[in-house]
Length: 113
Image 1 (spheres, rainbow, N blue to C red):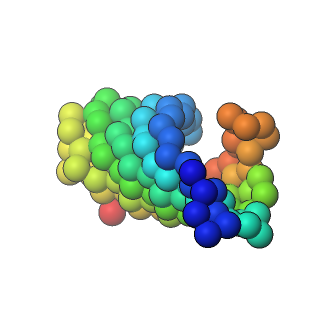
Image 2 (image 1 turned 60 degrees about the vertical axis):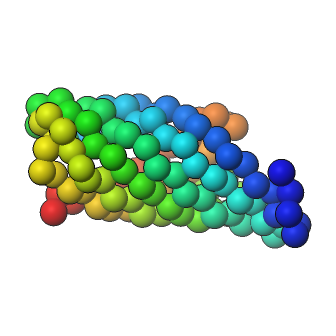
């Protein structure tokens, strides 16, 4: 869809995360690409896995960010955990770059609060 020189995509996806946060993220969100090549995006979904060695659980999350070309960065929050993630709240930042239309690499920094 296009509006005012912007291209708007609504999409869903699944990502695998490894490191101190291990699991799978299923999300749905919106990407707006502006005529100048910059973009804004937001999404929400469910994380299933463990954080800092916890037992397995699920947690809802939201993230938002900006990008230019293949590079992107943003913020996220996770909360409302169940199972081993019950009572946890995580917030942080992410940065990365797309290496193809469907693959990105980057880093996530967060803290349990």
